[in-house]
Image 1 (cartoon, rainbow, N blue to C red):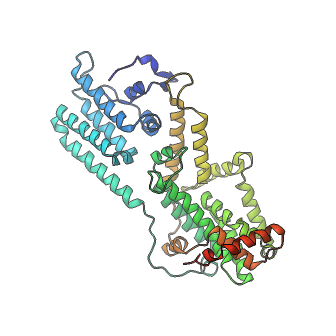
Image 2 (cartoon, rainbow, N blue to C red):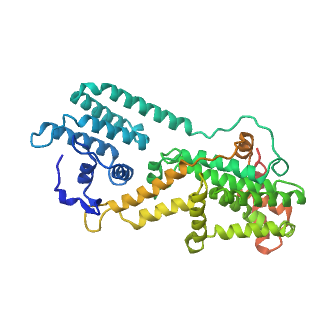
Length: 421
């Protein structure tokens, strides 16, 4: 392993802002007399995967210690074992998914054997580290599945459950989905299409949850046969959206809004004419709060205010991802015209992820109702095409465009007849 001149590390106000890959790894590598700061360690381990394989990082950290151990001109490594074990511990705590790879486990065992050779008394610490890793990976595996009760009491939401209760259960579900997403998944997903079985599948599951909730709301409205029941259900979910916003659950608020704004619903003129005007105004105010105008200025203000008032705030996830992606695109990984890594980008990504972790650590003190959660999760929903077809059953097409679309849905009728199976 070749070392490079320290001048390739550039600092500003005491923080690394650029450097070669080797020297950035050198700056994160512990010695007997040096240990990286927590903020640099997190920023580096988080972002390094975008420009170097984490396996290569761990391998080089170990090699640096081994070279120092055999080079009399470098500081003694007689006491580097505690620092090296702490380094491994923090990596496991912050990014345990990295150690699902056999190559990472091989390097971890190399590190542990090396520490034991340096200090026979650290055997217990090494064993404890492996136990901690096993426990972390087990916790991740167990957290992945959102609990869905096999049986539950069927609920008529409008009659049996207040909008505030539904908003509370949606908040609990949001936290369950969010809690499964790791920071490294968020970074890995940037600029990628995420297949279901990828390491980013928890991100995709959360996106799917948003879509499920949107279609659930639209299905609840359109599946009803009586016009009076439809308009009461429509008003009910308008109240649910407002309640979600009121408790700081912006992701569910946006999903419910998306469901209510499905074209299959908005085209129903008789339904809209029967809606309570005050509820319509409340919903219009909510839509202004969530408006994308001026880069979601109103929403961002509401988000900051909610963060000061509540112990649990659920941001609009699509926008959060968009902000992270924008940072990734605007700030290039390498300094233009050089091979130096732009570590200012790493600091920015670290800031985003620390804010994301704060969201995940939110505590929702609203009462849990697993029966309501089960109804939302398990109730079968109509596809967008099936919703549109159902909409045309309720109100016949009037415009030429509507008639053309209706003809298309008639051709798809065999598929839509199985929507609830």
